[in-house]
Structure formats: structure tokens, C-alpha cells
Image (cartoon, rainbow, N blue to C red; front, side, top):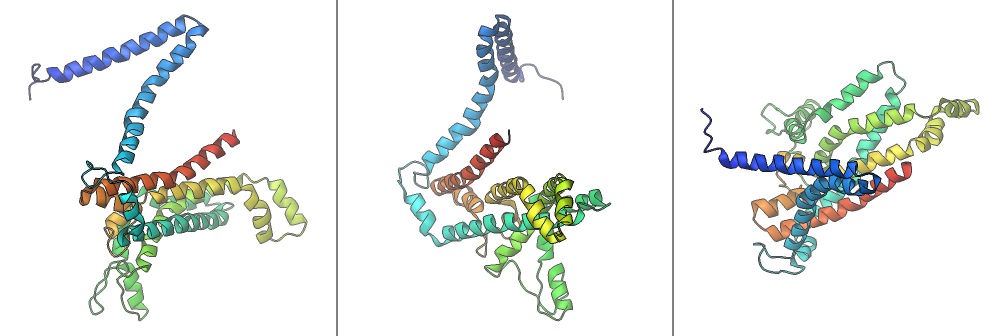
Length: 321
């Protein structure tokens, strides 16, 4: 297709404007640096200005807009006060999403960290440690959507007299049991979804904790053994206190990621059968049902829940310095 200068002229003008603006900023920075130390504050301000502008346009303004929408009606036009927040804590569907999110936030970090810790303790001194860590990290290479599709096949259900295609029901039938609809029966279906999240995140915990366990001073563990401590006592009283900061980082990272859980629920159940979580309900209300007020209120709640975890992470990193 031939290049048409007249058709592409508006795009070329935008490009030239961007290049001119970039050149002007660079020239101002160089000029400020050339003027000496007294002008370096101006140079630093100019260097930070693009990033601050992008943060304002891409993060701060949308956050304020979402907060304002959370106090409006379904169309986002009329003022609704606290109606959306009252709905959030009184509507049966919304309370199910809140309850499920709480279960996810409690169980996923606990189970993923526990599995990762046990795996790390088992392979940290092994000759095949690298290979073992690659195996446990493999699920992390799969997207949440891919993991949901894989495990949906694992949980697949067919009637009792029909050959089973799901791995779990095939095992149940092989041992003389009846196949079950694992993703339909509430509240157990929430636990089966949580298993998928743990499967994808345990490798992250295992890798970090393996490095932390390897960093424990050998002198401390050897001294404990010479004093007659058993391997279990050495692990509990020497290793665990030494890796506590890493454990905290792993748990907080898992909790933040779990609060935003959406893909697995959307792929496996679509939020049906009382498996919805806050992020999925926010999507449904805002985009599926067109209720921007309720969707924005759920987004604000999600932001409020994530903020303490992020703040703790920031404070912990500052202390570490």
C-alpha cells in the first residue's frame, strides 16, 4: 500500500509535536545543569515532571474519578450518596463476593506459603535443587487464564455411567466413588478455585524461601545440633526466626495478588454458583450490567483493602535500608 502524505499528515504533526516537546525538555535540563549546582534542583524537577504527569493522568485522576462515581447512580449522573456502599454490605450477591474474597485472602497466602516453605526445606540441600525449583516454578509460567482452563479439565464432570474426562472424577470413579460437580457445589467450589491459585503461586514462595534458608548462617545451625537439638527443633527455633522477613514479604505479596483475583474465577465459573469475588463482581457490575456506581464502589473498596498491605511493604523496605 503506497504511503499517502496527505492522509498521514495529522499523525506526522503529532509525531513532530512530541519530538519538539521532548527536545525542549532535554535542552532545558542541559541548560539547568550547565548553570551549576544552584540550578540542579530545577533539572531534577524537569526530570521528574514527565513521570509525575503520567502518574497524575494515568493514576491519580482516574482514582479520583472512580471515587466520585462511587457516590452516583447506575448511570453515573445523579447523586446517590452512600447507597452503593450500603448495597455492597447488604445485597446477598455482594456479601457472597466479600465472604469469598476474605476466604481467598486468608487461605491462599497461608497455603501457598506453607507449601512453598515445606518444598524449600525439602530441596534446599538437595543436589537436584535447581531442577526441583524449575518444576515448582513451571505453573508460574502459565497465565491465570491458562491455569483456569487446565484445572477446569481436571474438575470436569460427566454422569456416572459415562466415561469421565476429568482427572479428579476419574480417580474418584476408579476407587468406587460417584463423580461430583466440583465447581457447582457451594461452598466447596470456592476451595477448589483456591487450589488453582495455590498451585500457581507456591513456586514463587518456594524460590524466595529456598534462598532465605540457604542464607541462614551455618554456624548457628551447627551450634544448635551440637547442643542436642533435633532437626525439627533447629528448623523451628533457628531457621524460622532467620527467614521471618522473607516469610512476611511472601505472605504480603500473595495477599495483594489474591485480593485482585479475577482470571481464575472468570475462566472456571464466571462467578456463578456463589464463587464471585470482589474483582469479578466489580467487573460484572461496571461492564456487564452497566451499573457504574456499584462497580466504582467495589473498586474503591478493593483499593482500600490493598492499601494497608502496600503501605506495610513500603515501610518494611525502608527499614531494611
